[in-house]
Image 1 (tube, rainbow over the protein chains, first blue to last red):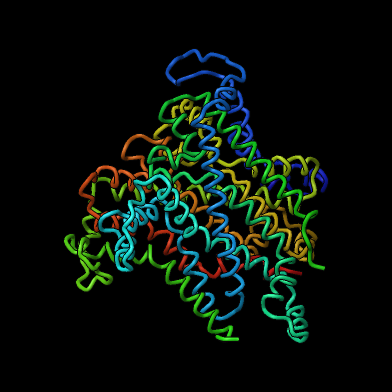
Image 2 (tube, rainbow over the protein chains, first blue to last red):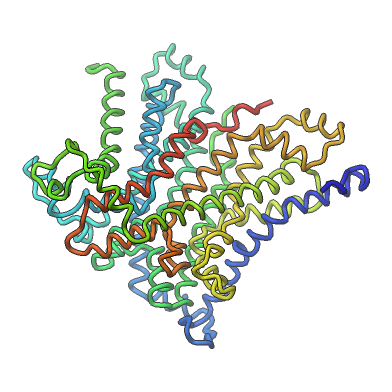
Length: 301
Length: 274
């Protein structure tokens, strides 16, 4: 790099050269593995191919048509939405509540934030194994607790609706701490004098939350919802370890459906079409969040 | 008004934190019990006679140490590579005026909207064509660029006061020198935070190693753990399984504890505001 000095080149040229040299590695890698992959997967979604056959057949949009007529695919969409609504519906209010309560410099608060955050750091596979032990039907801690209170022990992972409940709880456990941190970041943008003024005017804590905190953290709220859509639509490890998509496909969400089609049945074209639909949906959600942020939300004055 | 608000607040927080500790506590507890204690009624809530040998047994399982080493190596290599590619790109975007910058940044931001999981099919085929399936390259190379890290560092680098950079440039410093000697040291908290988040993601990832590796020598710890569940069948050895899970959790957990103040004390860019 020693020869490329501003003096030899002049600032304009020097900047252009360095600018492109510096962005090149990232642009090439992301171009190939990000944008290139999307182009490739679009092409694959138009093929009928099982990986082994050397001659894939071009079938146009047939894979998409097949998917939209497939009961198992439509059910996977419904399940994914149920999973998203349940996980987000619990995690969002819970993390907002804890964030509001933990908003302060005390050492105890710092410690508690760390406690809530640890599940996010633990490998999902290890956490899933821990949950499978907690919810084990015969000797699991949860069923012991139920018996203690005179309730009937439940089959949990071998019952379709209860298996869904367990993977929802695992999500809540994993992501609450992460969302607490995101909300705390948002809460830092709320000016303290507003609360002082409100307290003087006799506002209750609830009124303060509803009229001051809530409107001012809407940007964070939308960001967290977007993150939660992405996380819940891409939850793979939990399903793979805890239920394998079962029992009776009751936990086969879209990402797991993609995995089964692509890497178990080797229906490459179908799996690619699922990937494209997933990408379009999540891409639109992320884009809307990115663009819309400034429009629909209250910003600090 | 009944109970004072502070007591309520304390009860909610203490209750919540306790509930959130259960899964990890149960993992630690079970990993230290003797086999027959696992099925006792009522359960043993504390390992009064901790069976440390469970960890030794877990460690000595076939390929366990290899899985762990693979995960550490792969996650470390990815994060190092990402820090290099992302700081270079972020510096150019945040601090160097050049033609085509908007296009380059737009391209990087576009890939932000692509979840890696939807690219696994084409990526798998690319790896197959390169003959990289079941190699470290397949585990590392596709992730060496990171839109998230680049975006994060652009935000951080923009906060470095222009005055400092101007002073360095007047003294004839090159961009390379400014990035290396001024910007990176000033943005250490942001670098550590993004490195940590991406380390956690790649160390813990199951999906990609599951499809891009085949032999036990290339498997990572998340994949290895799933084997231990599967092979146990009916008579699951919960003590060893929990000890293995805990060993797999340790690296990221220790990193988190060591660098806590950077990761969750929010607003990592705070020190740099002009």
